[in-house]
Image (cartoon, rainbow, N blue to C red):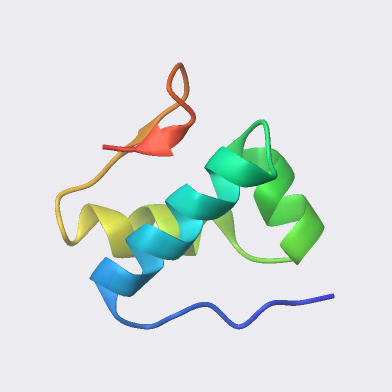
Length: 60
């Protein structure tokens, strides 16, 4: 099932970090389960100065 992600960077950040905290052990698992592009998420969140921290399993 492909999920439609928020276009707004702040909303995307909140949504992805909540999903990672509550349901997924990694960004890779989230992307696989939701059938979304990891590269797109990384790029959109980098545009608002957030990067994925694997050790924390969230964007910081």
